[in-house]
Length: 198
Image (spheres, rainbow, N blue to C red):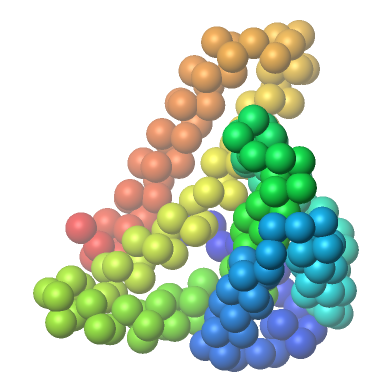
């Protein structure tokens, strides 16, 4: 299974997974509660930059995270500009982007094994509803680790498409992307089966 973890010894890396998840959750909740205004968007952006200014994370990682979610930003911004004013659109896009990017600190500074342990503990109450917390935690972890993989596959297919002179044709992009994505799904399924997950 591909992990998003990037080794390091900064404060985010040294913070235990449980308190770190809680702290990041509070930060994300804080920026989401800011008013839809220009200054609210500015504060949201400043908090986001401050989170990555901590040694061990870095501005380069922030830029990388923003590049990964660039299309999500474009789609949300387009919808917001149509149905809301510019001020609301900027504030809402800033909040959603900050929530995603700040959450990325959890996966990039926490080994997947620690993340799974925290998720299993957090999801224990689901056992009261006869839902297996281990399987639920694994599902969340697989989902979190799969999204960037799909983004990487998209970049690789686009680069290969450009190298062959295919331009930005959706038809020439879709088929190889689906083939590579399905191969990844097969490999992921085999790896989970080998570990006794059915």
